[in-house]
Length: 334
Image (tube, rainbow, N blue to C red; front, side, top):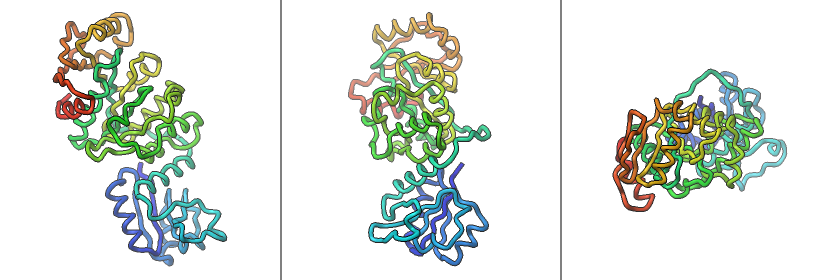
């Protein structure tokens, strides 16, 4: 559900600039209203309830803010915030619009309870996993994400590897996913809103993603229950949720398998991959639970013998660096 935002400032041109930029790039998270006349603002606030308000100094005084969950003072370094203005939370003018949106949504998320409403999940969940590293799992996950994005789907890529590969593929300019982990741990705030505020979008692929954890331990302390809450919250902000998983098969991995609509099992032609897959399929009861929704992705020219699943996808053998593999695989239908 989109947050209701009002921009109220007597700087009409700036208000229109903000509104147009938010409508063009953040319409999935915000429903924006503009008021540039102080005499009209009380009437607007009487007729509608807003989640967030960005209010100029001339607008924020003398009006009833009870209908606004999070009133924010629009200010610049050149403006004084003396007197009653000091008591208001502030958001700085003339900064990058995406940064303003992220800051406002994060403040709103932290001010809200994390109540669960009716099931409104949208995203199809695809888990990408392998029992062995180095088989091209991340490249396959990103290629699958790019393919879905090229179909016009809103795709969110969630990297759950302890050592994140996000920086190798995407720019990291926003808040770390550790911010979400902190909220999950404390239980204070609205995770769904926070997700919308800190996720980034790659302009080339149109894939949305989160910046890597601040440190290794942040990912390790995420419980299976917290992970399930994260996945369910992510489902409400995308059409496709692609989860790039670690090579472990622990309680968290099994939780993702349970939540996934599809599981892509990535392998290659190495002897290690063959042995570990054979062990997983024959010795682990998890395989029996997922094989009906699993497909094997055979990478690097792998030949799969007795796959035990109905679908095997063969990827081209590309001898290059990971970034080039990702680009080559982006055109392959998985």
